[in-house]
Amino acid sequence: MAAKAARRPSASKKPVLVLNGPNLNMLGKRQPEIYGRETLADVEKACRAEAARLGLGVEFAQSNHEGVLVDLIQAAREKNSAIVINAGAYTHTSVALLDALNAAELPAVEVHLSNIYKREAFRHHSYISPAAVGVIAGLGSQGYLLALQALARLLARSSFSAILDETKLGEIEMADGERRIRVARPTAASAAPIALAPAAVAASAAAPSILAPAAAPSDAAKHPGAVKSPMVGTVYLSPEPGKPVFVNVGDKVAAGQTLLIIEAMKTFNPIKATKAGTIAQVLIENARPVEFGEVLMIVE
Ligand code: DHK
Image (cartoon, rainbow, N blue to C red):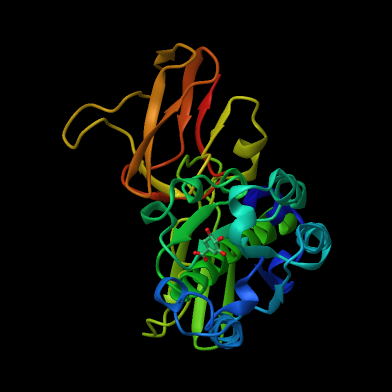
């Protein structure tokens, strides 16, 4: 989803939609021992402040009606750059919301105030998680702010990659307030991924983190043998520290063979070859963070 969003020009200039489902209008009054004492207006205020700090626009909405939530997500496809969604109880029931999120093709972060895994079994399953780049649960209203931070980083990386793609420039430098950011594409001779390097970085812990390595070159993304990351996480090229890597360039692999592992939310997810072939390129370094849709390897 992030990759698709990146293809739309100026996606990050559009506001992020923060969408709340049924009964979240009752925050503050409703089971405060579970959902906290903050009202939805308090959450909105905190989101607006955090979005402003991150340089994001934000739209805040709540509805008790599934169809209204579907309409808002459909409209977001054109109006918004990303979605933070607490779907309330529809999380556990709504295929319609899952379909709408998939159709929106926007990066979405699913948020729950409470730790749904500590609660009744029927809250343990989310229909909408497959459409989310990440899920945050149990951290109260802070979860919304963490979601905005994650999306700010994702959108910045997408827009920098899009600018390089659109301009065909090898390198650009941008000033954003006190920060200056240089974005460079590897030369044809180099197989290294694009590096984002700070020319001068203000010592502000509050600044959004956009200095991590960016996505692999767009040519790689178009390659039919591109192995793309299905999640946000950390890449591990070998099964354990000090052990040989799963695959090297030139290795022949079978369909279903593990190529690498991505750790996401403390879970180790093997990323397997979808077809037999030869490893033509490894575009990711060990122990590096990856975004959804980022190209990891090329199998030819
Ligand atoms: C909010 C709700 O309204 C519940 O139906 C979900 C979620 C959990 C939350 O924790 O924010 O199960």
